[in-house]
Image (cartoon, rainbow, N blue to C red):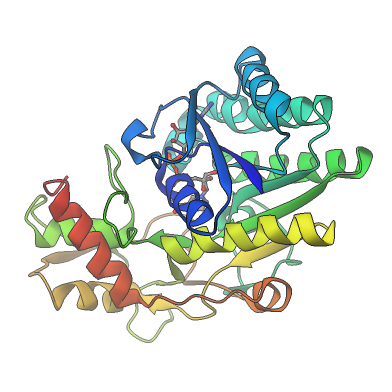
Length: 327
Ligand SMILES: NC(=O)c1ccc[n+]([C@@H]2O[C@H](COP(=O)([O-])OP(=O)(O)OC[C@H]3O[C@@H](n4cnc5c(N)ncnc54)[C@H](O)[C@@H]3O)[C@@H](O)[C@H]2O)c1
């Protein structure tokens, strides 16, 4: 397959590029490097600096590449994804995340490219009361980030319906860890994900970490979440793209582990390796007690289930953080 990965210099996109190349596929990356890193792009992938909200940038990539050989699949990772920022800057989020997808789809139709893989998020489910999310649960996002992803999902469905195209929409939960090569991993100016925050506290990059609430109705009172290793997630994208090309059918699936860990359990795993100080802070608004993904559909349709465990995520993130000097 020849695959265009938009946002392929970022965390999940770069890992997906690595897995695509390991599976023998040809990869082209387009990224504006707003939160991604040129050095994260695999050396065997062709790189274009460009912005998905700029039609000229998109058209240049499609024209130059499709003149040689059309893309079999386009993958979209090029989003802004910081929830509190989205609450303060909803217009920027709709512009980047929704207008970016609209232009990508427009250019795909102009070049007759039929398959799209889209990164969506558990945030589309909103404040899940059930705790275990299934794909046909009602969606009611509670912030502009989630709303921008849900709007994009719907647009993709309508466009695929109108132009005889096919989509694979993946909804992710909590993603962690780094590629085994340690060439790529989670590198952000401000880290907010639980595992790297706990590791930073253990490495004394921060004095301590906060656990938001310990009076939830869960086994130890802290929130339960679903964690997936980024390499498992990335490999699912290879399977999703291959599924589209082979079956010419659309799909929407959660990528999760079917099981959850409490915040304290995660911190305890990090504490096997590092001395982490934590404090109990007040609950945050909109944090449900339990959020787990059912991955039944991903198993049935793609034969996918996660290979790595929580301990692998902690160990690989720690190794990557040490490699990049604890940043
Ligand atoms: N990281 C998570 O835990 C998580 C969870 C659920 C869903 N997701 C989704 O996964 C996708 C990737 O997330 P990530 O964690 O890898 O983020 P990231 O910020 O590391 O990667 C996004 C990449 O897209 C690029 N980009 C952003 N806007 C662009 C634009 N206008 N034009 C071209 N490139 C642009 C950035 O430079 C970056 O390389 C996003 O769509 C996000 O909504 C992530």
